[in-house]
Amino acid sequence: MKRIQFLNFSISLCLLVSLTGCTTKTQRQYQKIRAGDISGQELYHLIQEFDETHSDFVSSKLDLAVYHLVSGNYSKSHSYLEKCEKLINGGSAISNDEKALLFASLSAVNLIDSKIDEAWEYAKKSYGIPKSGKRYGFLCGRILVAMEKEDEAKKYFDECYSLFPDAIDAESARAYMYLLAKNEDYDKARKILEIYIDKGTFFSGLGLFASGVYEKCGDLEKSIYSAFLDYEYHSCFGHGDDGQFAANLNTLEEKYRENGISIDEKAKNAIKQLKSLYSQSLIASPASDFYVSQYVHLREKIRCRTFDFDDYKSFISLEKYFNQFPCYYWILMNLVPQFETSNVDALVLTLCEKIISLAPSSVFTPSCRALIGKSQGLSEAESGKLRISEEIQNAVYMFVQTGQTKYLDEVYDFLSLPDCTYVYDGVMLLKGFMDNKFLFDEFASKEKNEKGRLKERLAFILS
Image 1: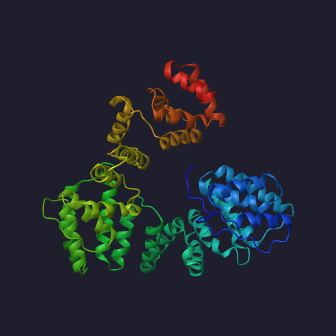
Image 2: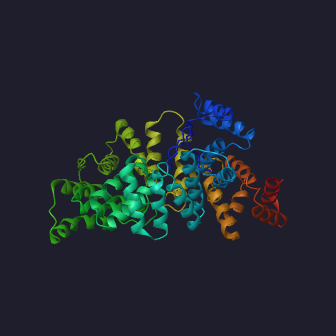
Image 3: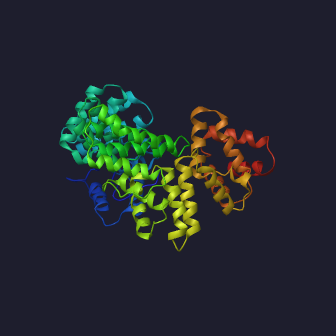
């Protein structure tokens, strides 16, 4: 389950309703809970306790549904949402804000479950509620993109962005910026792109898309740096060729001239700085305060051994932009022993786990497994079978979704390892999944035909 900071149930999907105009005693009691000074898990538990004693009260169920939706527990969220819908269909009164939120949340869980038609029907219901539904135009736009109705999607995005520019979420910005670029509205595409960069996370292809948008807007410096981002990301998976990338930089200015593109000084400096990163030349000054330029500059300082504690703090401050880059965490992991004075080993292991979680197939992962395994007293061969919680969850998810037992092979290898903290945690994690009958039956069948550690651990998980 994705962990979030739970403060007053704030979410990106929408603004939660404020309970106004409460007239019944029950509503006043609930409003008092929500208006109090408490937050986080304490607030969650109070609302949960209140809901358990008020079976026909919609608002508490809706808040719990939204909490579980944002937390990633979609099945539990859907259960609460269905109860809410049943109650309002039975005559329970709720505000327009709450009704719009309910339908939008039902749309979201159906969208997550790839039930596009159902998601669209609920999104239309939400959007159709006077005033309250208008802010869910972003959700409508995303669903229409999934339905390949791009022209209609753009209308919803345009309208909603004009009304609620600050309410656009990362996924909506991602869909909207592509539509704008496809319609050659590059200036607006750039604006939405930069909102996405601020709110969202990097994905394969984002750098090249950004490079094209910036080039169309005449910002060659950012175009060049954005192309580097895609190269840097893919190099984490062994697909990089520094020599070829440097050669491409050598011919870039010539290509610009051939296409009649005027090269400004910032773009020239960007090319110079990137070339210096892949050569033995003297370190180049950053071309600008653009975050990619700052990242390259720090990489150069590491290469030239002029990196100091202030640079270390600057590097950490860039995490927001590079939190999907295994190479960023690999560099940081190697810097920790030089600049941290306490909990060094724990920090290194945490970064190893982060790298594995981001990219189990990255070029850094074998070394990360070896470091974690060594900390647990495992041999090199045993370390290769070590899995972190996210990997176990993903393997179980793929088995449940496909029915193919091959996805559990790595789980069984993991459960055969000698005792260590990671195995204990993995066993308890799997034990928590045993309410899934399909998985339970598979483990029970496997346990009957095994022996040794694997048999013992499967038996404990099943108990």
